[in-house]
Amino acid sequence: MGKKKIPFTQIIALDENPNLIKKLKFRFARHKSITIIQNNILNSNLKPDSVNKIVTDPPWGYFAKQNMNLFNFYQKMLTVFWSLLKRNGILVLLIGNRDLFDKLLLQFQNQYQLLNQYNILVSGKKASVYKLKKI
Image (tube, rainbow, N blue to C red; front, side, top):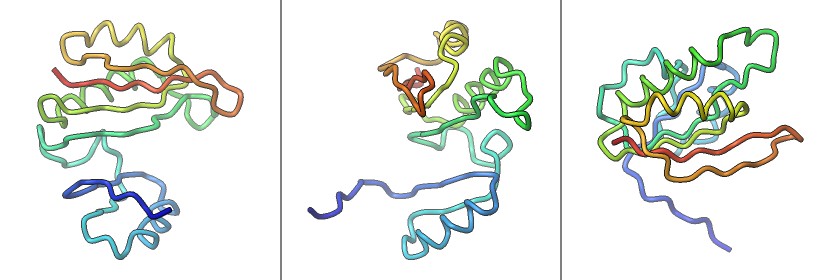
């Protein structure tokens, strides 16, 4: 079975982990339309209304070094993503705390439309994949 081609003009992959960035740059070195950047998308210099799709697995807050207020983090994340996405842009997220995220989505009902939600298990933990559209 051959590899499927995904139609795109450019992919930008961002992560803060320098080891992951190094591996990704090596893996995709021959793909000129894939740009790998060590950065946090919440603080990036990407232009507003410039992104068609965002796919992310944000922190779940389970680890000591991730001592954060998840509600505030997800709120900032959704605000930044809304700014970056083009109209009708798609956001796909893997979220570990779906109760918290569902409550937060109510605040963004004028910015995002929930297209799909898939409740799943990841390593035995309840999670959800959300597909949202910028409106």
